[in-house]
Figure 1 (cartoon, rainbow, N blue to C red):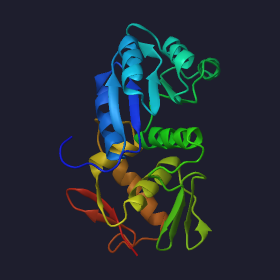
Figure 2: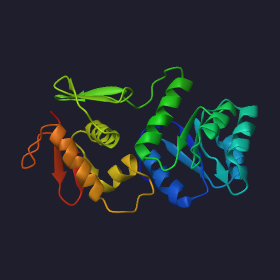
Figure 3: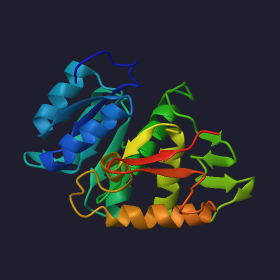
Length: 236
């Protein structure tokens, strides 16, 4: 990336051999204020971990030259760096084994960008003893309140009944109140980072979220459409 950059929230080492996943998610991390370093193999991941000294390792379990659990075990011999495992394996046994190897958290594919970034921030907060990162666990914009840690959203103090995706959309838009968030960024942050399908599902969820916020589709009070670009949450 070029141009002046804001202070980093930390360096994330992403060990993932599928470029279709690692490249777009690295961009998501950078947009969220992190520095992203990508390794495609277990050997490269271990070498970069020693050289870069990342703040957190996002580690895929299936790698071309070894098992991610072996990488986790090797990292744990020399470092207490936080580790979030990422894998298509979804069994309870895999989760338990991964955590017993020293991982701090476990995310199963397919995943949303918002989910993994939220997990990363939570692990970093714990590892830093509650130290400050550029993330608000709860905030409000006008009559809308968002408690990210508790995954609770309110309108005029009354809790909203939102689906998981609706909550993630609301949190992403409200966190960027007054700014246009592109359709592509919303898809990358809330749905899979390697999403290449139709964005029709985004329109459906935005419509449902507007109804729950009491917005008039003709003159929405909260979520404004910026035609051809994306959406903006109104500052109030």
